[in-house]
Length: 370
Image (cartoon, rainbow, N blue to C red; front, side, top):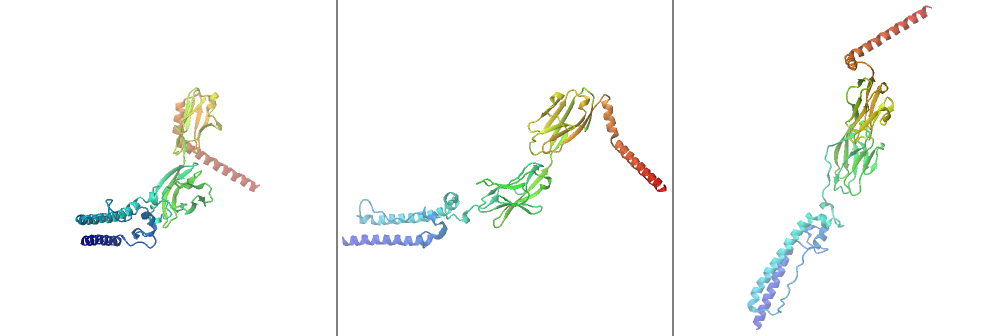
């Protein structure tokens, strides 16, 4: 009986020694405990909270519920099972620590984003959402918006610079230009930093730099193209009509980047959009890119200069002559006159100037003689 007890104690002691040796070997493989919290240092002290929340502890063996009695015949098999179980526990801990290291880094945003120990090395790098060399078209007199979308800006500050003279326009939301037409717009928690230019002029065209002041600084460049919208009245600039005929003038707005606010028609210096009592009817599209003026029964009073004036656009004019006569002949005379009429007028002006100069010289000569 004593020999059986000594054998059982020897086997239990041997199992305990094996377990302790395996734990010691596992600690050597995984890493020595840190001096402050007992965690493996392979992830760094700064990330200790991440492992502390999920690390498994090596628990002691739980006794058999059937009692402490161990049959000698089953002691060898129990020792083998205990050894296999310990091997599985050790391998599980090592695998779990490896998975925790990789998975926590891959899902850092959901775990550590609001942690006080969330450090820069795991942050997503900053990048621009707006493509470099983006082109923006703006119309004279309107407001231009140059977009600059920045992801993960962190502590960076956005500056806008006009490249042609390297003039600093804005830093953050502060305007450093004396030209009050420039300002930066940004909504809280958004990633858009937009340069706004009010009442755009032709001289505003060129390249603009959106710069983030981090180390090293990062920039993209945008090009502003400024166009000047203009009106065009379809047909010749000189029209001939007979009394009682219909006058129809069509005005189109060209090179417009925005909806036109209005189109006004003028007869000489009078605005005639609402002169229905004079037989004048004006119809326009909803966006005012097209307008039509119609007079069904013209009279001599309808002769004169007609001007189409859209908002933020250059106007266009035509001259209308209403008279009794051969309209086709008048058109033919106007076309054939062309350059020859221009030449005749200039020749007559030259002759007149020469005559005046001769007359002045003659008068001066007479005055000196007297």
